[in-house]
Amino acid sequence: MEIDLGKSILGRNEELARENRRLFDSAGVFVLDVLASPGAGKTSTILATIAALRDRYRIAVVEGDIASKVDAEKVRAHGIPAVQINTGGACHLESDMVRRAVDTLDLGELDLVILENVGNLVCPTEFDLGQHARVMILSVPEGHDKPYKYPNIFQIAEVVILNKVDTMPMFDFDEADFRDVMRRLNPAAPIFPMAATKGEGVEKWATWLAARIEGVRAR
Amino acid sequence: MHEAGITRTIIDTAVEAVEEEGGTRINQIDVTVGELTDFVDDALQFAFEAMKADTIASDAVLVISRLPARSRCVMPECTTEFEHGRFDIECPKCGNPFNELVQGRELRIDRIDFD
Ligand SMILES: Nc1nc2c(ncn2[C@@H]2O[C@H](COP(=O)(O)OP(=O)(O)OP(=O)(O)O)[C@@H](O)[C@H]2O)c(=O)[nH]1
Ligand SMILES: [Mg+2]
Ligand SMILES: [Zn+2]
Ligand SMILES: [Zn+2]
Image (cartoon, rainbow over all chains, first blue to last red; front, side):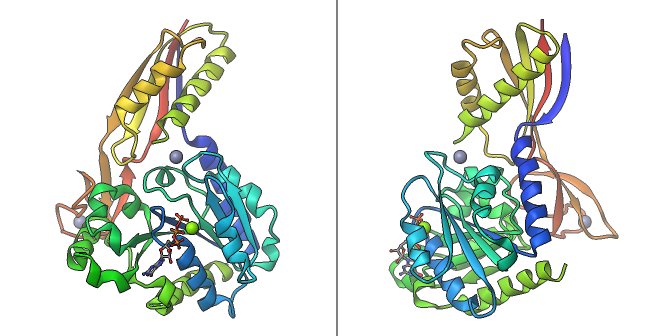
């Protein structure tokens, strides 16, 4: 006998992601998913973004890590609410984890929720979380050829940050080549060079993000 | 990378669907994987072999079909649909690099053969 199923294997996560997105939309909260390798500067970029936008927007952070709560504590030290999700070994966030985390926040009192995904360039691409935008952070020490090795994550991101540009003199990072491969992979994605820990280049990125936040609030 | 989790979902979904139909034994599960996903056939097969034991799919085979990536040119005067790889995703007709993906990211159970 035969069953014609035609069912998406990621269906459950996709359903929950749609539910999350409806929830965020109705609360008028913009949700940003931050993707990068371990150590590329996700937490540093989040802190720099908070510094740039905290006077205009009410912000909270959801930290995804396999274990520990050090990143959430770094965010809380700046007086910003942070929820830590320990994925317990899972190498990416899924929609149900995000839902449980945001349920502990008062969405009505927020404008921006930033999700720090688990440092991983493979899995997160397959799991929609209900976010409004995904930012991919590549740091200079990782090399300009990362998009050749992990094209998917550079393709699904809506915007790319090139972080740690202050270390350019120490590495043979070929920015022209990086921009060239990005044009081929994802020509619509703007690229913002930044040194998150030095506050360099944060302004332009924050302006882009603020425009997107306004788009969701206007709905 | 997370082929194990995905394979678990494939087996659980198939077992549930077949048991609902009163089936007791799964012979074959057909799945479709888009070329733009990061799922590797060998890793899926490996996980499937490891996980199917002690289920009604213990003798089943997993058949994987891959779907090429396809996009549609967003220029209103063009709208050409074309297949492509991961790189150089520009319209072969007008050269426009901004295209809309229509196929290539799927991960789907199509058919289950059972007794
Ligand atoms: N020189 C320099 N160092 C940076 C910059 N941004 C981050 N770092 C350093 O890079 C290290 C990792 O930064 P994090 O922000 O913790 O990176 P992460 O991606 O959140 O790391 P995980 O959460 O562990 O995956 C820290 O030592 C930062 O101080 C930068 O712009 N320039
Ligand atoms: Mg971090
Ligand atoms: Zn994973
Ligand atoms: Zn065209």
